[in-house]
Length: 173
Ligand SMILES: Cc1cc2nc3c(=O)[nH]c(=O)nc-3n(C[C@H](O)[C@H](O)[C@H](O)COP(=O)(O)O)c2cc1C
Image (cartoon, rainbow, N blue to C red; front, side):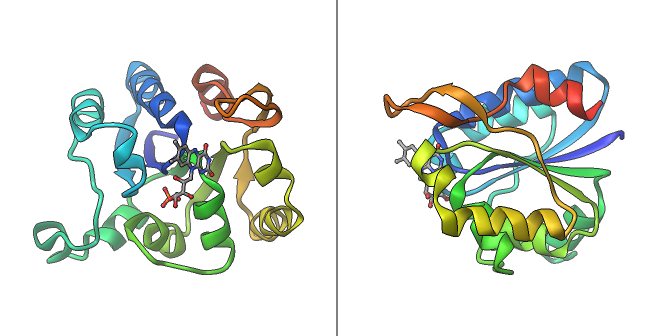
């Protein structure tokens, strides 16, 4: 596995994506990143771009990239697609075949291994509707790393914390 497409969705754990980029680079992997609109409220393009050494893609409405069908190029490019953190929204959208933004469109278009590192409140994680979506994705070949159990940003305790970047890297490399 040499080429990683990292999709950063809009959870409180988005800051951990920066450490993931740093660790992938340290392991000599090539990395390209996509951030959802929500993710952009948690992290800045500059941090992602300086760490990854590549332009951050955030929107389908990007004529320069899309003149050459950039979203399909992105879907074809990696060896794996890692979604970290993976929100309840992006997981459920993909499980239901939605392609409402660049991140979801690439996830729908790729034939490469998709790995989700979920991060959310414990009640969201345990929601039965949501768990059905996880089962759908697993039966379609997607893999899941975490979430782990512990204290959450919302003050609750339970399963829902994003797996630590070091552990994710260890599982993938
Ligand atoms: C402060 C804050 C923290 C949030 N943390 C999470 C989270 O950890 N997990 C999650 O699934 N959603 C979280 N959300 C909700 C998502 O941002 C929201 O569902 C959004 O639509 C996700 O969009 P995306 O999947 O396109 O990134 C949070 C929202 C806010 C305002």
